[in-house]
Amino acid sequence: MKSLRIIGRNIRDSFKGVFRNFSLSLASISCITITLIVVAIAMTLSYNVDNFAQNVEQDVTIVAFLNVDITKEQTDDVLEKIQNIDGIESYVYKSKMDVGKEWMESSEVFKNIMSGWNEETSPLQPTFQIKVKNIDDIGDIAKKIEKIDLVDSVKYGEGMVEQLVSVFDLVRKICIGIVIALIVVTAFLITNTIKITIFSRRKEIDIMRLVGASNINIKIPFVFEGLILGFLGSIIPIIITIFGYSSLYKNFDGKVFSSFIELIKPTPFIYITSLTLVLIGMVVGMFGSWAAVRKHLKI
Image 1 (cartoon, one colour):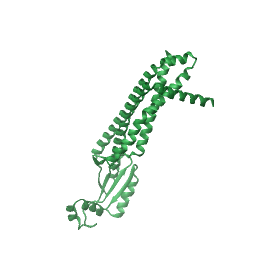
Image 2: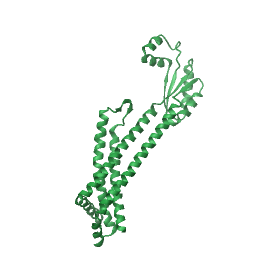
Image 3: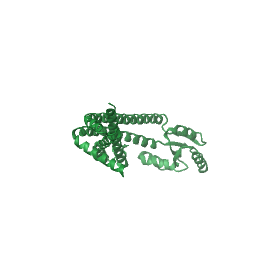
Image 4: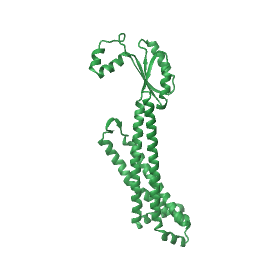
């Protein structure tokens, strides 16, 4: 009970400190708000770039073209060998007629040419369309499929896919680096702003030391004060993230420029981002206050 009373008193004193030094507190809150808005924008871009990369990678398909004269029994044998290859997520078999139907639906010219074809007379090749679990393994899996008897050829956009994967990996690393760098800069700015606030109240700290308060008793109210400043500074960035991104998604109908580039859905993204922002604000606020008071107490 005594510990709870002490914590309660420190929290109360922290709120009093925030409002008693309102102009300095407002400067700290403003700094936190601005930097966290920048972090929120960077996180939004990073998440959406990663989402776009994942969508493209999921659409990459290996197409295995089978021998035009393959029988049903031979097709089943090829399927069994494909199923035994590790790393395959899913597959779809398309017969000659299925392939022909897709071509006819895509063009009236093809429809006129192919309308008289049947399973026996069609020169088209049946195919297996295969998706892999990990895009990095697509080249090795394609080579294994190509070695199967009665598989004439395998296509998956070789060369271009590897380049695309390399570009996406680089973009991911750059986005992660930008977010981390912004968080570090945010921590630096917030910490120094709070240090200035604490420095301006050094007389208050000196008085507390003169009346016999221990270092820990001096630090705790300021640490809670930093937590409160961090929380207050994260409110506007959170509001902008939740309502701003939701409106953006709604106005663009979840797509940017074309249906090929899809935005990540607001839920649960906006809540994860908001929680991250409030944690960054509170933790950095606490750390900044702790570091500032600790430095002053050493003087």
